Length: 217
Ligand SMILES: *[C@@H]1O[C@H](CO)[C@@H](O)[C@H](O)[C@H]1NC(C)=O
Ligand SMILES: *[C@@H]1O[C@H](CO)[C@@H](O)[C@H](O)[C@H]1NC(C)=O
Image (cartoon, rainbow, N blue to C red; front, side, top):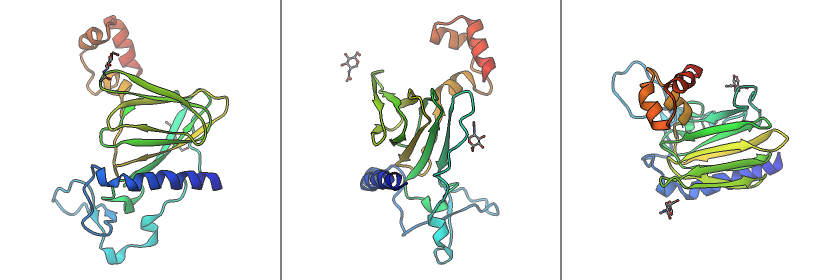
């Protein structure tokens, strides 16, 4: 547990020093604890701030990232996301954390975070990870506990647990709401479906193969 805390501290320190280039707005006050107010019709891009005199230590803490998630699904992977919705004290601060769990052979499939650069710190397991730049060059490496990889803003990236044990990694993002676009879902699992003819041409596949893929999502 001690080594987890130590590694987490390193990630958080690294992120804190990169906040100057964060994309989220700079806070205009010490903090802005998020509240959901359904009684107002004013549109706010983000969350409302709680009256600062009502803020409590619980607004700025979260417990439970030591608990593994259930990886018994078709990917063999799951995650606990700590966005502003789970952790209101993050509001406007341009930072979030996630825990990722991998079964042996588990895959975090190719995806994009449209609003956040990610630092991924391996705590357990042997993880093959990589990202693809806008020139379609793949940058990838096998990572071991204590190793860190950065996935630059909006780059397609993935991880595979190639070890024989469960894997655990912690991800931090320079956005309070980095978002996630999973490529397979955003191509074959859209609502309504993208015209199978367009996908067949794009992927050089038979239309029936495209329809079969669309049926899986
Ligand atoms: C992820 O883990 C949580 C907590 O263990 C569980 O409730 C949820 O169903 C899991 N999701 C998937 C897709 O396996
Ligand atoms: C883009 O990719 C091509 C082919 O892989 C490579 O020759 C070229 O150096 C790359 N350019 C940049 C800027 O990375």
